[in-house]
Image: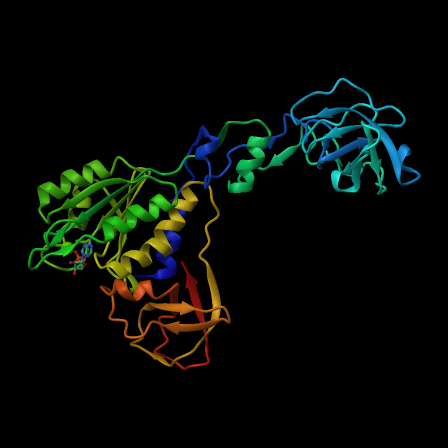
Length: 396
Ligand code: AMP
Ligand code: MG
C-alpha cells in the first residue's frame, strides 16, 4: 500500500496536457489559453469622451465662466464631420468619438444652457487639458501581447478578448470523462425506494462537479456487479480521457472492478492508498486514458474528487495544479488511530479556527460534508491532536 503523497505524484505525473482546439469565446470561460492574444486594434480604437457633456478647446476655458456656441450634438457611434473652432463646443455623449478641434470634455453637470441666447452654453468649471477624454490606445496599444498563452480565462479575459473583436480562441481541450456507478444495491433517485437498496448519490455528485468545471461528462448509468455487464460498460468508458468507476474496488466477493479493468487492458498503477477514508482507491492507465476505481462511499468519493480527480482535470486542460491548503488552529481535541493520513470533514472559519464536524459517522456520512468547507488533514503518525494546536486544512 503506497502513501498518499506517492499516489498523488503518480497520478499527476501520468496526466499530460491535452491538445488544443478553437472554440467560441462564449464557451471559453474556465479554459486555458493555448495562444498569446495579440491586439489587432488599439483600445479604445479612437479618442473618446468618457462623460456626457461638451467637447471643448482647453484654451477657450482660461477665464471662467465662459459662454461657448454649441454647433452640434454627437451620439455614440456617430462620426461628426464638424470641427470645434475658437469659442465653440459640441454636445457629446459618453463613448462618442471626440470631434476635430476639441481636446477636452466638460461634464454636463458643470454647464448650463443660456436661456436668453439659444445655442450658447455657459461653462462654469475649468477642466485640465485632455480631461474626460480617453485617447486612442490609452488602454491597449495595437500589436502587443495582451494575454499570454497559459492564462486562465475568467470574466475579465472574456471581456478583453471580445473587446479586441475576437469570437474564436485557441484553448487547451477539456478532457472527456465517463462516470459509471456500480452495485446491485444502487438505484436512481426519483424511483421508489426498495428495501435493501440505496440511491445513487455518487454518480450525480460527480456529474455535477464536472458540470461546474464546464465539462459535460458521459453518464454510463448504474451497472450491476456482474462481470459481463461491467466489462461492456468499462469498454465504453475507456473511450474517454478519464473513466471513473464508483464502487466495486474493495475486498468484497462482488468487488469485481480491478479484475475487469485488467481484462480490459487497463494497467494498474496502484491499488490501495494509506489514507482514510478512501483506502481502496484504484488508479490505472490504458494508453493515454486514466482510470479511477473509487470506493463507493460518498465521503471518500468527494475526497478523491477533491485531491486527485480535480487536480488531474486541471492539469489535462493546462491549468496549474494546486491543492488549496492553509494552516488553522484546532478548536477541539481530536483523537483517532494513527497509521494512515486522515482527512476529517471540518469547518474553517474566517479567524483561522478549525472545527471538525461534530458526530461524524465516517465514510457513508455525506451529511457531515454539508456542514464542512474542507478536510482537516492529520499526518499518518498523529494519533491525538490537542485543542489549540496548528493543523493543516484542505479547502474544497
Ligand atoms: P463498494 O465500494 O462497492 O464496496 O461500496 C461501499 C459502500 O458505498 C456501500 O455501502 C455501497 O452501498 C455504497 N455505495 C456504492 N456506490 C454508491 C453510490 N453510487 N452512491 C452512494 N453510495 C454508494
Ligand atoms: Mg459495490
